[in-house]
Image (tube, rainbow, N blue to C red; front, side):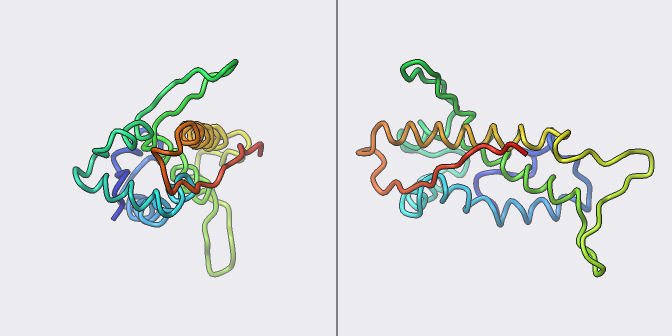
Length: 166
């Protein structure tokens, strides 16, 4: 069961019905930890998860609250912006789910979904890249904040990410 994000967090992004909630929950369960391990590294992720589990809705330690919550910080001639870890996870997981929903896996191979009174949007014309890139920007801003004070975040070993261009 996912710890950090819930199905309700996806209500404005993913249309949910009795069929999609089961699949979406699988995505939450399978992807949540992986994205956070990429963000923080395995050791720091373990500490973050333990701390988050105390209350179950937000971390308790200030160092983790600082990266959990959204922030805007000046850095020389640029502004580092984070939507917060929860919105970052929602963006990444929604991206994966919606991208895969464009294609169904059948016994005959991969087939594109077809709607009765609609045309399936192309990957480039959808908002999927924007959704993904906002999460990547948040990921990188959080890692920048961690890099600013590595003594607070011992064990940090996150992997940086690049934006997608299509």
